[in-house]
Length: 206
Image 1 (cartoon, rainbow, N blue to C red):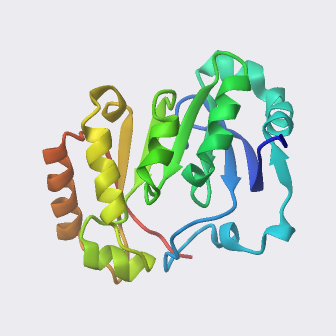
Image 2 (image 1 turned 180 degrees about the vertical axis):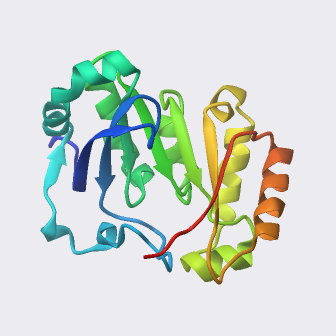
């Protein structure tokens, strides 16, 4: 059987207090189900031949240079993209093979099949979930996709207290798409599900 591989458009080292605890390395996977109007990583759905294939072993070898930083600060690897949960099998194998003590963080839109969430839920130390907006009309207008799968996955996570406690939900104010009142509405509905940690901010454009 061939080893699992994935297209990676970036490996960004020495990130601090941005993508999880401690010093982290951000790994950006190619591929995303969304087409957000203000996507900051539009290369994630560029033609795949522009980017290298990584096996799990190759990625661990490259990242291991920072092993001491991870262990000293409680950091590790953050998988983003694109949509990292499209590569749940790769992430599971990575967890099985990487050195003990590395934390694994996920930055996700959560717009993936529930099985992909379940595949990694037990070992993800921190979830950063960017839901855009919980209002389905705003979400679809901004991403081009429906958010019913997002809401279903949020409810599944909410039903598992130990997973829910590791979640931070991003609630952005997006120019021309939602308002501070929309953000408060999203937060209220999410608090009713049991979520308590939120990152509320305004998109800035240069």
